[in-house]
Amino acid sequence: MPGNVRGVWQVPVVLMLSLGLLTTGCTQLGRFGIGTTAIAAVNRDPAQYKTVMVRGKVTNQFSLFGAGLYEVDDGSGKIWVATQSGVPSLGSRVVVQGEVNMGINISGQNFGVTIAEQSRQTF
Image (cartoon, rainbow, N blue to C red; front, side, top):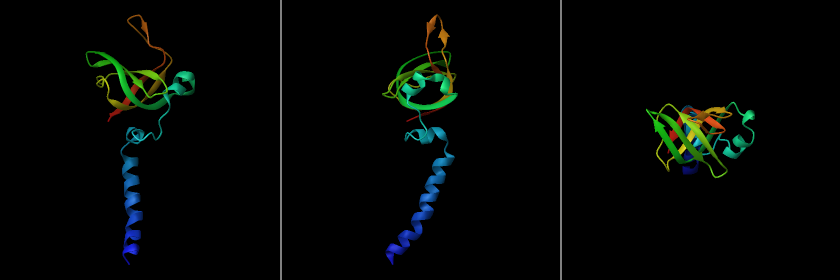
């Protein structure tokens, strides 16, 4: 009988957890690698991606008046992310969703392929 009771509760609990993950947004799922794209793939063929979600460690950053750029490394490659929301701290792990740009030039420095941040989750 205890086995039957446990079986009855398993399905609703799994459904509730699944629904909770789906309603928390894409960047929450990205924490677990769901729906993310390898940075190397984005760098290799940026024209293939309009928007993308990547995750990794912040390895470089600079900001000015709340806007800035930060570099994310996922182990397959690195990419610069442009933000209007302040930069995350060095060493933090992030999931970033945004629009892929073919290159950005700021103060004479070319940053190659970049992502214009639309949303970010730090963990």
